[in-house]
Length: 321
Image 1 (cartoon, rainbow, N blue to C red):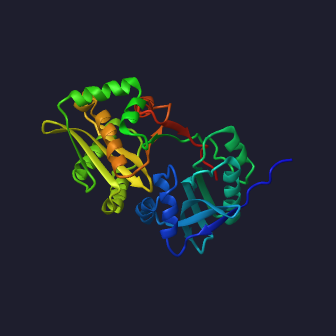
Image 2 (tube, rainbow, N blue to C red):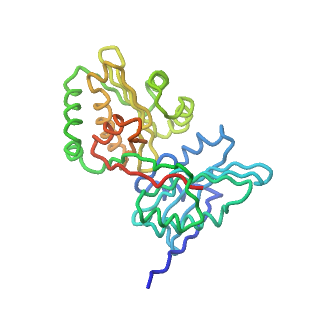
Image 3 (tube, helix red, strand yellow):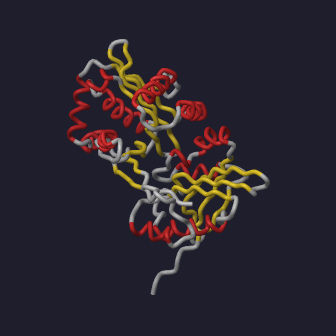
């Protein structure tokens, strides 16, 4: 006899966020797109508003999620976005529970004329998870491919983390450590303008996808006063040769921006910054590092670089509506 499906209840935090943020702060791998700071930065320019919900599975608190909404004519025209959610507490997030959540979500925001739903579940792309989602009323977006990222667990000590690095990556790190590079780290925004200017130039020259410098600036402006923006630079003499920017959220952190010059690539300066950042983030109490999107189609070098840190490559199930 099959086990009964779990029951899911959504409880909205429409009057305050303190309880919600406490749950988010203790959830493993809580990602940037589900953080309140992200919504505060992203929603106003897009005419959206964030809403925050808690998830009860069989009556017990199991996780939280954040959506972005836009509406006109009293919701006659309505858009709802769930990016990389929900965020589950430890021990939750099984396929049955994910399916139960999205059935409850569908009852709350049923498909209808005038409503657009864009959902990117934070759920691994496994046969069991796909089957659980296929059993709901969600529809997979045509042509959707699974989003990939690399997570690094920052809880081990630095000696263990260094031993986890792949051999070629560790060799590049030793090269950078032997070079005459000066690195500097700041939680107060020092060199931030220079880093963002370099990012804008690098992105334009190399043509890779990623958030606009305006979006990253809005995120930094929102998070900077809360010790959630970490800026790192590497210089050779008086020349800046590489930079990295990390955004923090709950117990997690995200590698948001990184760039290097030709001289920096020769010296493996980005390897040095990523390695030092892991120590800085550990010291600040962050437990996980999300290295950001990777793919096999047009950025194999970036994927190889990020996987060299010895983290776990995770592929999500893709977009639904």
